[in-house]
Image: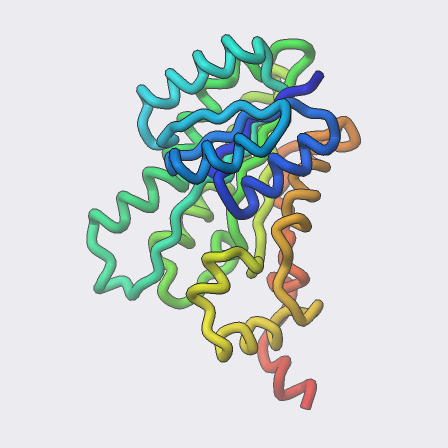
Length: 249
């Protein structure tokens, strides 16, 4: 039975990914630092292992590796999904806020992939998927820390793919556009949502399951010759130019 480890799995895209893989017969370790929510969600799932861990802490990552190794003894796929968002103007972004974003969004995938490389390289090699963002592919207002962290993660993906390919490990990234997560529903006002709809060719937000499906493809045997790619799952948002609302009118 194939095994996967999904970080940031207590909710959102991470939880949707874990559930999708479980439905395909995988054994899945769900990792998150929000212990209460993680343990509650994992308790409802079969073939699921809950690991409470902060991916930005090297010691906690080491303990997570030991727990997964003892429970599963192998790892076929690592999904680096854990992330934090921080939106604000450059002048108002303190160094503490900057570091908080970088620690989770960039340090976390580095530490996790490094820690699990040996397990992933066994049995012919596994796969890693880093969850970046469309904000890492195109700049936008108030995302100096978040966008920069995701852009750096996109390049880290390429670095990992080049080096770890020699060990049989494929590394790709998914860059979601606007997705109907609870966070988005809480912070995106109606006028923000309308603006996104105008800029997205498919004229809607994505769903967590749609991003999870792209992740599942990238770690599957169907993508066995795919590595070093950044796949935008954004409804065409990254392809659009300017002036679309006026042109539509």
